[in-house]
Image (cartoon, rainbow, N blue to C red):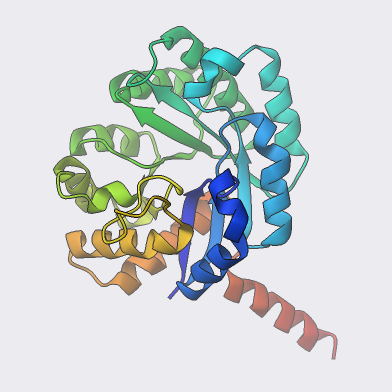
Length: 277
């Protein structure tokens, strides 16, 4: 069984003392690829260094909506574009999006989001979207962008919306990614959403080091190995096997982020070796 954790932040300081052990655990749990999100462009060198250490890590570049007030200015667009073009391991733009739970700088957040959507459209990369207390505004804004500029693929990460809100983003062509919140007892809307997402649009993630899933919720640090518990919960909610959820979410992540599955890479190497004999 293979799993892909589609959203991690393992560049954070609390992973520094034992990152090799964390990596050993995610490999033991069957996590074969990880997509490292980016909160702000200054993280890019550290994230790239992690990908140098662990070849299963691909990554994104972007500016989080809660950092927009302090860090956004128009020159950021050129900076993010240049970074995205600087390394072929960049598989997405983000995380970007809207957060009206902790901030009310609506115009600034929309300006930053638009710029990052333009980059994604230009480079034909998916976007990683954060959305908190902003689903209706975000859906309307994306519809407008689709009409003015063109559609962009992407994922609603750490999704916490209702089934109705989920459908808005499915209709826009987005993938929906569930995190440890889907395992929480009082997460009925999220759990209901996990039941309606088509199998070919479903993703799983940890958003580590945040939001450790049940049965690890009491731990101070979430980690990529725990994505197995997210997948287990989604499987239980949908009344299918864990293997089925693992297979579909892994295939979906590979398709959205254009990742190579390990067995596919081995097949290519084997075929090359055979053809050279």
